[in-house]
Image (tube, rainbow, N blue to C red):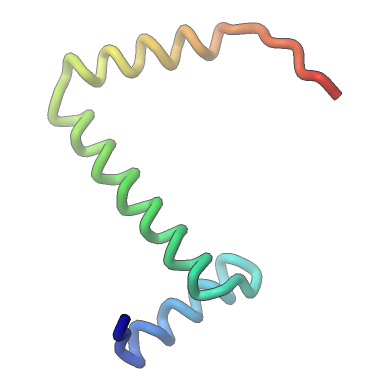
Length: 70
């Protein structure tokens, strides 16, 4: 995979400043996750019925009382 010097350096700065010295692969993984999350949220925003279902389900899950084992 080819990556330009400028993009590699930008990724390295993110890895250093935001991931406490993580690897470039770690930084790329975080950026890809954030990108995919934004796309999923945009799909929700574009579909009110799906957004309502999501909010209803997340509200129900927030009310679940589960014992956490130590």
